[in-house]
Amino acid sequence: MKKLIAIPLILLAFACNREIDQSPREINWDRDICVNCLMGMADQKYSVQSINMHEEVLWYDDLGCLIEYMGTNDWIKYGGENAKSWIGDCETGEWIEVQKAWYRYGDRTPMGYGYGALKNKADSTFDFETTVQRIHDGITMREEFIKAKKMDMHH
Image 1: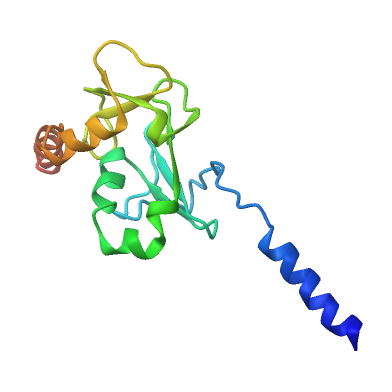
Image 2 (image 1 turned 180 degrees about the vertical axis):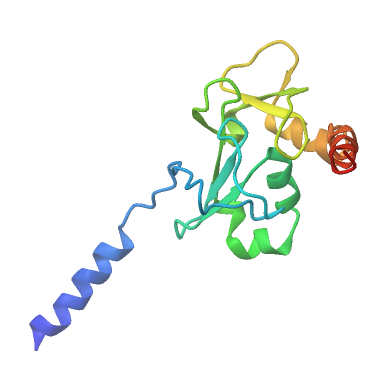
């Protein structure tokens, strides 16, 4: 009887001590879509992924989609405040922690927000908090992006 009690306790101890893997995942190009705009993943150099404490992955095809999603109740339900987010370096595609990346403005990104991530600080780059504020303030390339998409539809 004591053995029957000990086994579940040992299993519980191992389950509680299990390390959470919030490392970046590989994109499944045939399956993964942006949770915010529902577009397919297009380019790792601008893709973002968030991994929560349950190791559930959410994908975004553009940094702007992550920023928008962070303002939703779904982000809170997902446990976003404890999630680790990664973005592709816009030059190498290497995954960088979103909070540690530097952002340049003017890139042609999948949804037209215009921010590319870099591993190292360079001239005219912004930290994450500044970039979030700029997107909230409407400093994006979305207007030009949408205008170009509409013109493509009429041709």
